Image (tube, rainbow, N blue to C red; front, side, top):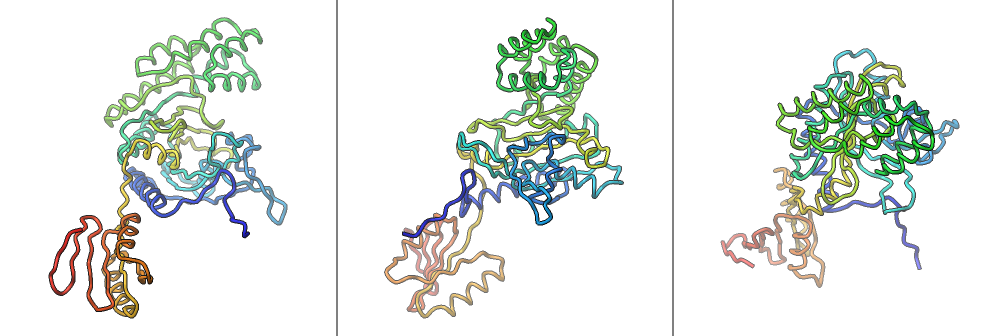
Length: 419
C-alpha cells in the first residue's frame, strides 16, 4: 500500500474556504495598518542565528529551528519578526531621523514541546513604530490594535497593559541577581504568588520587597489601580513608569478607546528586549493572547542604530480560532461564477469565460462528467462560495442559476423557476 504523506507535527495545510477567509482577514487588517500610515516590509524567513541570539532577548535557542548553509554559518527560521524588522531598519534606515512606520505579514517558527497541540508555524501580522520614544507613540500602537480588532468585528476583547520599568524597579529594590530575577518572573508568570513569597524568603530578601511582590497579584484592573501602584513603587523610576501609563490612558480617551484597556502591573513581557510598556490582547474562544506587543528602546542598538521603538504582533491563527468559536463572520466574498458545460460545448464555454474574465469576473470552468447530475455541481458551488452557475447544455440551451437565491433562468426564452 502506498504511504500517504502528511505534515510534520505542529504544522498544517490551510486551503479552500478557510484559506480564503484567512487571506481576507489579513487584507482587512492590512488596510487598517495603512490607514495609520504604516508601510509594508518583508524580511527573510530565515536569518543568521545572531539575529535571534540570547542577548537579543527573543525566543530561547533550544526552541529555534537551526540549520547550516554551505559555508558553515548557523541560520535560524525566525521565531519572531520584530528582531528581523529591527535588523532591517537599522541597516536600511540608518540615517533616518523621522519616525518610521513599518508593517508586515509573515510566518514564524517555534519548536515547541509536544503539548497542548500548539502550532509550530503561525502567521503573524504586526506593526513597528521606529524612532519615537513618546507616550503618544505608545498610545497610537494601542489604538491601532483596538481599531484593528473592531474593524474585523471582534468587540469582546481586552488589552492588558503593564510597564516593564515598574517591574524592574521592584527587582532592583530587592537587589535580585539575574538567576533570582528569572525565577521570580517564572513564578509570577504562573501567577504563583505564594511561591514568590516562599522563594524570596529563602534568599533573605527584605520585607518591603516581599510585600511589594506579593501585592502584584492585586495590581490588575482599571485605571484606578494605578494610584495604588504608585504607593507600591519603591523609587522614582517605578513612579515614572506608572505616570506614563496614566498619560497613555489620557491619550486613549482622545481616541475614544480607553474602555478596552486594563492594567496588569505583574506583566514582564513576552520577550527580554522589552523596556517600557508591554501589552497583550485577549478575547473569548482561545486561551492564548491574540496580540503581543511592547516597547523595545534598545533592540535596534544591537544592530547599530540608536532608535527607541514600539511594536506589536497579531497572531492570526489564534485570532481565527477565537472568531470561529465566537461565531463571528469573516467576510469572504470569493463569488466565483461556475461555467458548467456538456461534451461538445468547449468553444462556447471558453468564449463565455473569456468575456466574463475581461469584465473582471472570476470564472471556474468545469466540463460536466458522465453520470453526474446538475444538483451535484450546485451543491459544490454553494460549498465553495460561488455566486452563480451557468450551465451550457448539449442542445445549446443555457441555464443560469443564482446559487444564493436558487433562482433559475433559461437564456433565450425568458423562463424562470425557483428551486
